Length: 247
Image (cartoon, rainbow, N blue to C red; front, side, top):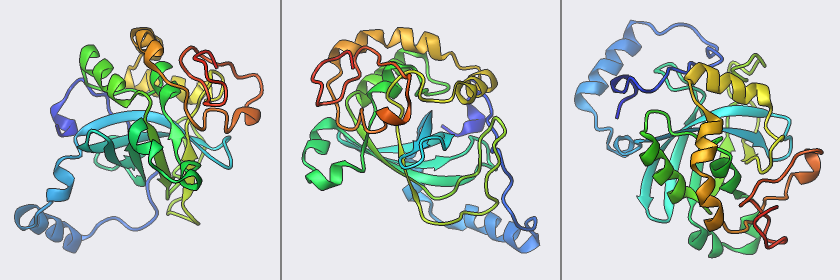
């Protein structure tokens, strides 16, 4: 459903206008022609919208909000394009591929290190599906339980709570990671998102508590553990090396 057709979703604008001059007459004419004559079939089914927080795998202090627009390819694979907001002026900042636990298990051992676990994002309530009724959002969370994501950011446009970004994409793509314990994500970043978009992470977390018993230990939960001293585990989120649901 297009963003402007759902009044339940609160606008979240990009934290940064890109570098460059304003569009002139020719780009506007081109856009109008494209709308009438060109086929945008590959984009039509990117209709699952979720928003979460990401951190850089090699620099976890680099954190930002990521708005995912995803297409469900089949029961084991979703592919998502990532933006820094949900309005028409949002910047395209990366991609994420999401695989089921079954498909992740078929990956070569040396490939698995690129994929982050999702159970904390789900059970903490941090991952939200704005605009969906609570029942549908919980069903989506259940679908994503025990899954993994491979995420590359190509553009750091900054943080919505004030940290500046770059006016154009710079450097190599950055492998991103998930948060896996309370206290890892910057509370100011989460609070700014929730207040602006009128999201209630605590309530979402309470609704999903029953999913903890169905969460399996995952690879990568402890990957950044030493980078976040003082963080605390939550029920249902554990590394495969621990083999229990308490972390």
